[in-house]
Amino acid sequence: MHCPVCGHDCVTDARTVLAELPGRFAPCPDCMGLVYDKRSPPPDIDTAEPCPACGKRFIDEVFAHIYRVMAAAGDLAGTEPLAAVGTPLVHPGFAMRSAPYLPPGSLVLLSRSARERTAGRLVAEVPEIRGVVRTGPGTPGVSDTGAEPAEHALLAGCDVRSDVFTTRAGPIVIYKQQSALHIEFPRERDPKILSLEREMDRHQPRMFVDACCGAGTLSLAAARAGIPHVIANDAWYAAAYWTACNLRVNRESCGVGEVTMHRSYDDLRRLPVARDPILVATANGAHEIEIYQGDLRLLPTVLPPGIDLAALDLFEKKDAGKIEAITRAWRARVGGAIFIP
Image (cartoon, rainbow, N blue to C red; front, top):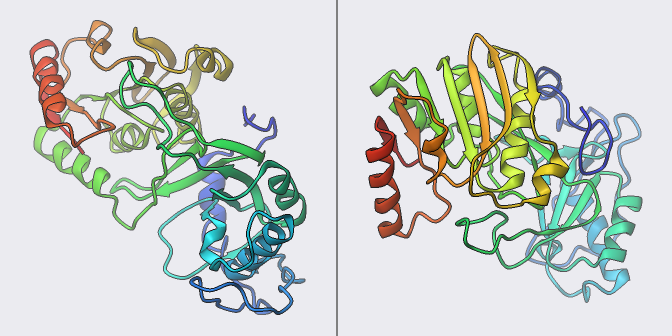
């Protein structure tokens, strides 16, 4: 599938991602790698090259290579610990039981220290890196339609990557643009998905609304579980777009045919935060799925009657007063059961 960030075909369907998953980060018999102390600078030894047999390299060796490039460029002094390089996000991410051996193009690096020129060198010189993102002070996204949104900065390469989440009905693959969406580390059993599954058992819904859908994890988990009608919504452009993209990626397991896109990535980016709900994508088949971009408080204007269950996964859950006001208004206008994952 066409990637709106880099223009290449780096988004593949869920079947392809899952088929490659078992051996994606496993070493071959010829692989070797040293484990480094992340609290100290890497030792003064030559960094191992990728394995000549399979092309993979142990993640600590990759980080040592990144460290040396950043130190040579002046982004690091050379006295910082190895962990100062940044946060590694592998593609695809899934619940791992051992440190990975990375194939080419499998790592998005989040870093506070990398500069743009150095990021270009990293993408060119470190084969495992697919993109370098400079992190900012906030979490990517928007806490309210009246608030200033936050994004990180993609410095070089492409920051589109995927995560694989486990559900009772089977796995789902969630792509996201990492500079524009918050990090979700997959676990063997995700707490939010478990929460959704408990509510589905309790209420047996036929129509589910994921009112703050992010990249669409709960929406697609609900569709994969067999809920006949799923409606996803988010005010943030990247969340609405990637939910639609992820519906395409998982359409086979979600029981839908072709996904119709009503808004392009560029259309949505021109209005990063929407208030009035905009229809972004639809799909039909064994299930009916609609995706909107808009303020959840205005979403009831486009909802059909008969909503059984709604997830209100608000960005800032610490504001108890705001949560109570939103849930009270939702209950009055929409009805049905509500839960906060």
